[in-house]
Amino acid sequence: MSLATVYNTLEVLARAGELQEIRIKADKRHFDPNPAPHGHFLCRICGSIYDLDAAPLEIETPFNIKGYLVEEYTLYFYGICPRCRERDGSKNQ
Image: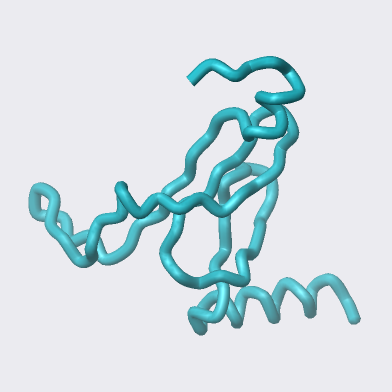
């Protein structure tokens, strides 16, 4: 199976709502098998991507902001993951 076939299949599944495409890194495409709305966290030290329950920040759609009808949104968070904080001693906050 070619890499093009794999990516074409992933794109079809994303358009069908079976998974979601994540563009948390500018140079790479990632696909999450969980299509439910949730945030994603990128650790700036190890580069790992984690699902993040952002329930306190979730906003029901659709909604209006200054005349713009927002139908969907993406939440990306950037920082240091617990494992890297523990390893590097960066336990602040």
